[in-house]
Amino acid sequence: MKSKLEKLKGTCIGIAGCGGLGSNCAMALARAGVGTLVIADFDTVTLENLDRQYYFREQVGQKKVLALQENIKKVNPDIAVQAHDVRLGPDEVVDIFKNCQVIIEAFDRADMKLMIIEIVTECFPDKFIIAGSGLAGYGENNALRTRRLGNLFICGDETSEVSPELPPLAPRVGVVAALQANQALEIIMDDLEPAVGADVWDE
Amino acid sequence: MTKGKIMKINLNNKEVSMAGESFSVSELLNLMHFTFPMIVVKINNRLVKKEDYERVFIGDGDNVEAIHLISGG
Image (tube, rainbow over all chains, first blue to last red; front, side):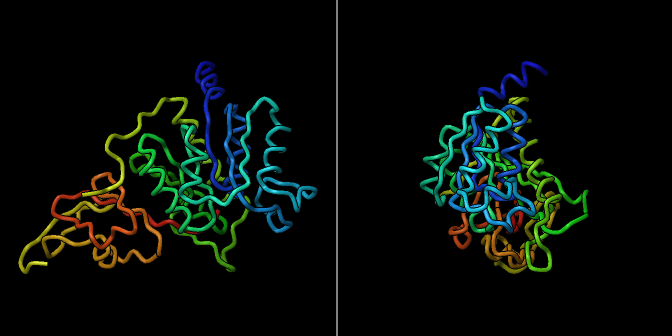
């Protein structure tokens, strides 16, 4: 186990989005001892974010990537954090996460989730991507799960969409973020082999 | 679609029989009531990009995986 944990120090994990999924996943990976975290988001911490995101009152108004970097460093100053204050599109994803072994999808919008899954599968067929899908509301513990499709893992219940009636709440968001972090650890510590031929369809 | 022909595919680990010889990804998603706008579609483990749903066809024996992407993060 010790040598497996040792592997984490030499590992670089990318986190696309620093909201509910991204901030909580980053903190879990930091506490577990992942050596390098590459975090990216364009947004600013608001008071409303504090119901589920890993930020504090005094950080309201700060850029999320800088606030998250600060929180990671408070837990473990030895972790290298690359913070990118940027709105991610396909080109930025390729550029920013090219040195990461595993990429965590932590966006809010479904179209952004599909965007990063498509670009990572196309440009980095040997990298693993771990996405979150379906985490709104409360309860239904056992509906939250992980499915593997080639080098893509999807964590969540795949059905609960965020809406005014079904807001994202800390416990379920935190569970899905932890599922993503836990899957990343398994990939690294057990040296999971990337699936062969799990790239993008073409003629 | 040809009359009388039956194709069998594996959709999300379940065998599904359909009347016809092949369907585009768009047709299959409609037939199978995948309703959310964002879906990860893999045919024989290869990802089909959303822009290719009309021109990529699924035929007998294909293994198809389709998972909804739900907003929220």
